[in-house]
Image (tube, rainbow, N blue to C red; front, side, top):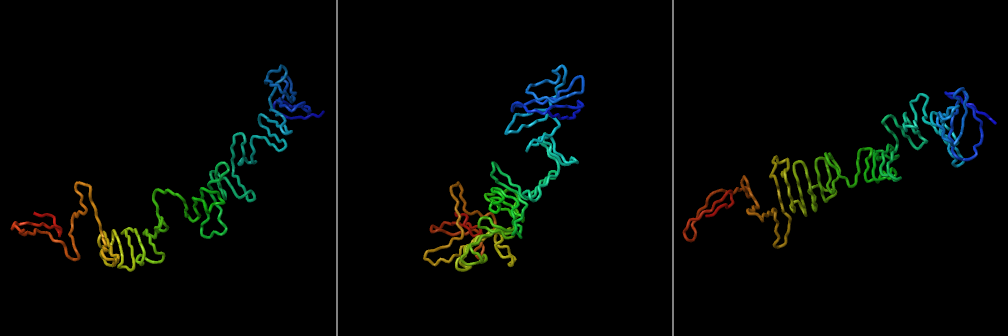
Length: 344
């Protein structure tokens, strides 16, 4: 028979014999201390014993020796102990000597600067509220659907390495439906963007952004006056649509805003409409402007608030023209700037 001595606060010593338990069941572990002396011993029992139930001894509950599982018994101590049993370590706090880094397993708290160095699958550090890592992937049920990356592609010399992505994992970063590159370029499919957008280049559908101009043309290398082309442009001073056939005289064109070249020193009309398409077929005709107004008590297709009407360099005149009809009765025609406005 061997004896083990353990020093504790409430007795000078505790002694207990080492022996085998008769079964694999659990046991309560008590420190049994004399009420009149300093003797104490360890007792293993399946009986619950209150602290002061015994006339001669105090029963201090130290823990529970659990039933055997996979040929291993685990001893759970109630307070202030560490148990090492095979591959199992059971304790309350793991700490550095200066207490600047610790794991409080009872409260679930971690304090300190933790670094995962190379060799442990990259680099990750937590410093206060700052988390740093080469790649962080997020997802659900084992499926990664977004990531943040600090890694630069080996061949990247222009800043095209993807830093943020959604709809793919890091391995699929270059085809993710949403991704942001190191150089600030964002690629997004099915994007809905609100707010202020500032762009000096790029494309919207078939329209190109070039500086302060948005334009579209059916030619690849020609300019806005290339034959057999269609050209559309929106600038801060004008909106233009132009179709050219065989030559610059074979043209249909609508311009709103500035309709004359700046070199002329004249802003031109507020709107310019031309239909000069060459059509040699008999009966062909070009219409530059067609207006329609109907289905109201007063349907006016064209209303001129102020200003003259001119054909070429000649302006329409205003006045009263009188004549005698075939019956000798005086009639009158009233013109306003070349347009007949009254008849009597």
